[in-house]
Length: 97
Image 1 (cartoon, rainbow, N blue to C red):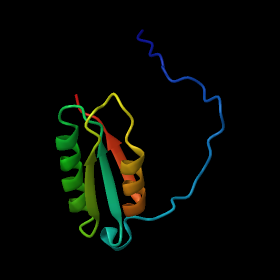
Image 2: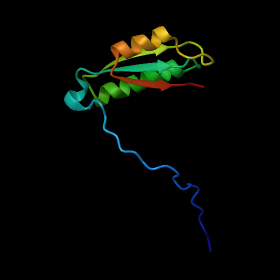
Image 3: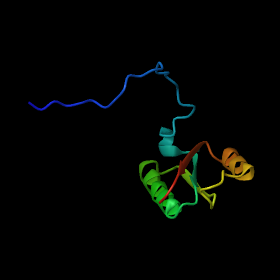
Image 4: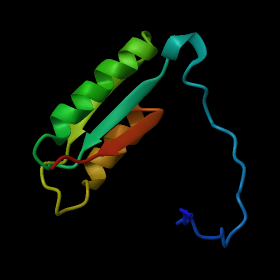
């Protein structure tokens, strides 16, 4: 007989429901700028460029902007984060390898 083990543990904290601050699907992304932050690993910027392409296919009216912090070993600068915050309603951070 084959026995399967479920590797998931018990949830120790209650699940908290939340509401999204913005529905980016409304108007196919109209009025929404998504900031894409590459961490500086090789290919992180290439990967996020492809993410931007897929986002535009799904939400043709969305705008995307790409930043690359250039070095995975350091945090994004306060200036870069301020620029993203001031210009974007959504942010996605990603890494490469």
